[in-house]
Amino acid sequence: MSTTMKNIPQTWLEEIIRLSIERLVIVDRHGVIVYIDSDYCEFLGTTAEKAIGQLAPDIIENSRMHIVAKTGKEEIEEIQPINGSVMIANRYPIFIDGELVGAMGTVMFPNPENLMHYNHKIQSLVEELNFYKTKAEKELKSKYSFKDLTGNSRNFRGVKAFAERISVSDSSVLLTGESGTGKELFAHAIHNSSLRRNHQFVPINCAAIPEELFESELFGYADGAFTGSKKGGKKGLFEVANNGTVFLDEIGEMPLFMQSKLLRALQEKEIHPVGGQKNIRVDLRVIAATNRDLEKMVEEGSFRQDLYYRLNVIHIEIPALRERKEDIESISNELLMKLGKRFYRTGIELSTEVLNRFHQHSWPGNVRELENVLERAINLLDGNKVELAHLPLYLRDQEVVNFQPEVHVPASPENPLNQAASTPVLTLKETLAQAEKLALQNTLLLTNGNKLEAAKLLGIGKTSFYEKCKLYQL
Ligand SMILES: Nc1ncnc2c1ncn2[C@@H]1O[C@H](COP(=O)(O)OP(=O)(O)OP(=O)(O)O)[C@@H](O)[C@H]1O
Ligand SMILES: [Mg+2]
Image (cartoon, rainbow, N blue to C red):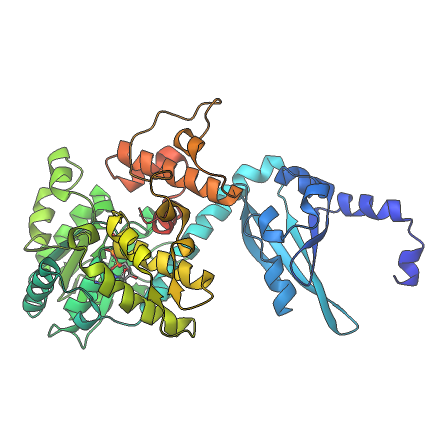
């Protein structure tokens, strides 16, 4: 301790930290909490006694202290959601005599009056940021072709051959199928074997675009169209996709007002940038995808019939994994090979028990679920064989934890999680994740799969709702 600090009594130090506007946690080299201030504990609903000695991420939601304590790289002014609030976090590595010994983290709590306002402001920024981040990641992602589509079952081969045949046509394609069946992969593959393959393939996730950005994103805007708009205007995605393919993913989530604008653009083959004077001609091929029942949405009036006909010129329905169980083994092997490369492992196999269990499972999240299950297994694996013990609990013991969607009565104090009551002991994180997944599933059932409405009912932003759906393979 420096000479100046020595003059401060130990009892003062705690109070000084408490008075500062930031909350403080200190971890050792392994990310284990060695100090956490009392107000922070109160906010987290824990006590210093319970928190000290635990790994930071087990106590603090979205904590990265263990990472900073390992990398020695500071992280400044990061946004960290904790208990539903957005916090500003700073994380500093602690070096003593040139040696990395741990890390200190602070989070700033906005005061209660400003909390709502602040949260709202940050939340929309975070949503916008996530949206652009996902978009940028997508654009960097490698492109797929038909040879990346694994599956030898009769029905899958049929669908694949049909998709390959219609690739060269310019007609609109509507891809349907449950979540995780490979709609996006098919869209890429169709573009890459079409005559447009040397032009852009532009994926547009209709569920993730904030409503107020829809028009400017798709059609662009002219110089000075609105305050804060970029000088010189901005090209819309439809113009970027000119001569190529535009992939309208999650088309069922497109709001009605945008459906009309989209239809007009497709019919007239022209787009009108926001605040612009003239129309721009575009030559596009449209591939749309959804896991919702568009026909039913048309009946209910939430999807325009004319747009539906325009998109549904060629319809490709991708079969669910449970309808082609004979593909499970080959897809698993393919995925294990890919994952093996990523994790520097080779020769990983599934045990007979695991394969049997895979055959019994209904795979509501389809290939994406299988991919997640295998990635998790590789992380737990010591040898080369994936055993039942490497599977997530819901697959290991399907009788007990069963995630077949059903509408449940609201949680009650006697039985807060209803069906979770009979499950074996899970970590708090797993339990919360289950409850969250269940809440999402039930709300989606209530809204007939309408994600926007479900997000509203649950009181969360649509981007974060959308991300959670991806996480839980809904
Ligand atoms: N036939 C397949 N062979 C190999 N991998 C596949 C196959 N089908 C899907 N996948 C993988 O499964 C994951 C999910 O695929 P994709 O994103 O295309 O699904 P989706 O139908 O668009 O799902 P969602 O409706 O949730 O958006 C991807 O990582 C993809 O690589
Ligand atoms: Mg998709």
